[in-house]
Image (tube, rainbow, N blue to C red; front, side):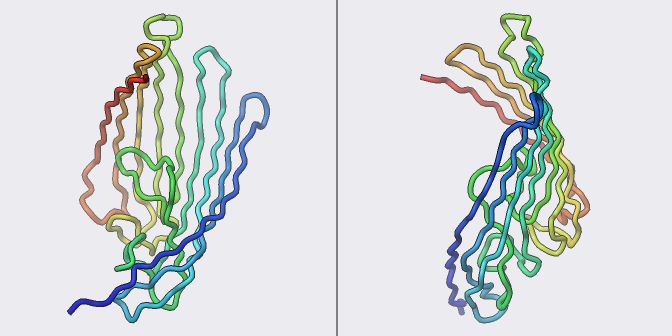
Amino acid sequence: IGIPTDFDYDATYLGVGAQGSLGPKLLYLAEYVHEIGHSMSDPLRGAQTREDINAFAARGELTYVFRDPRQSRVQLETLFASGDPDRLATSDTVGGNLSGTPDRAFNSLGFANTGLAFAPSLSNIFTVRLGGSTFPFIHHPALAQLQVGADVLVFNKLDSDGPIDEPTFQKMYLGVEADSFVNYRVTSDLALSVRYGVFFPGAAISGPKDTRHFVLFTVTLSF
């Protein structure tokens, strides 16, 4: 016999942000989003009730620009997103929020850099990213528009008891990832890009601990 289930999820996002410079070489960016509204509780753990959403996410980024001809820069970024410790699934109604408790799992809209190979949803995570990029061959006309860069990301759960979008233990450390990219504008109309990411699962990942790889090749032709 099926269980009658109401999948209603009604959320409002309130955001504030700022960006600017802290001198001639240091740029900053900060964003905060608070999610409010109502969601329905998990139908598998009692009668469904309508509960309040009270979740948040934040992002902070510092960029140091060297102001050299190669347009070199390094970045330090951190992401936070709240999770719900009584959920079994971070974004679903079935296995979702427990009746009688506020829903603290953030459900994101838009894009945040959570890596290429791991790429978790922006919910119940805390990440730190250190990266950099440069145009190394500016004195070679054929390669002057070739940019290279790399990132290292460390992933943790914000709440060790809460879920993410894959099975985990009640631990914090999710793993570490290294990403790299090459962007090459061949002509004003044609651009090539290669991206590679490798993720090393941490103690919180309950599935296979195999290293994960991601490779992406793109060709962009502008008209």
